[in-house]
Length: 322
View 1 (tube, rainbow, N blue to C red):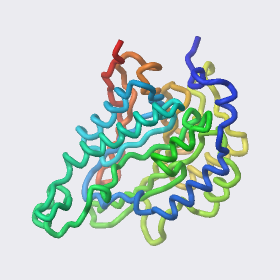
View 2: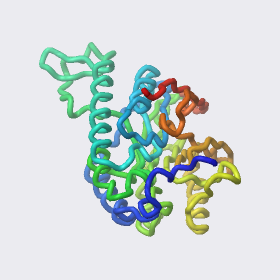
View 3: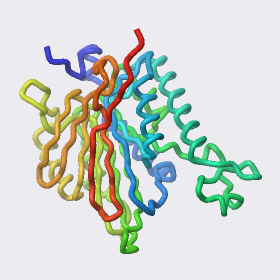
């Protein structure tokens, strides 16, 4: 029997989320508008990479999530993203997840920041100006950006997920100084597709240009992240649950955004394809229960200063303790 992403919770929990997409998007958009600074990435002066994982379904064993953070820190990735179903919906699992994220931030700060004589943090490599910084630990944002998945919202799980990550619908720019000295933007867009539908509010906000960024800049790459898959990896896997109209809307919107790569999860099955000059990558589950053996469960994207892109699958070695 082919393993699918929704066999560990009740059918009612999968199909009827505790908080509807309309409410989640309204809450998320308000938080996004109120706390824009939390979604900012500093300007990049050279090449950079980012890491993508999906469907970790964390329960009592945080090993694979811990490994993802370790791989990202060791690899020097600018940011880490997650495509949803980060944990199964129990309070104790989210307590473990919250502790894991805080621990990962501690390691991130310890490696990349120093402390000046006044007790403030400064980026390692900028020692000449170290005394000018007045950053506190809380002002340093850990660059982990997830979307919400259907398992994250079942049985009223939205309250648990949003308490840690706050917004399921947001965008942020990465400013890049090209070899020609031009300042351009690579855009990262995160959609709430956990209910298998965008909903009217999200469609309206997209059409109103909420995620379109700032005027006056040249947009180079756009990367889009969502949970529910667009394409079916094979005839034995789930098709997308978007309505036909929403599917056409999304495919057209990706083309309008000139998306370079669209990332999806949900079906626990690898798939790659190009449609309308957009690359679509659907990732395997990185959960040690769904994927117990070591394997290539992550994706790392290399963004070159000259604008070229490369991506690779990244191996994970963690095996659950018996």
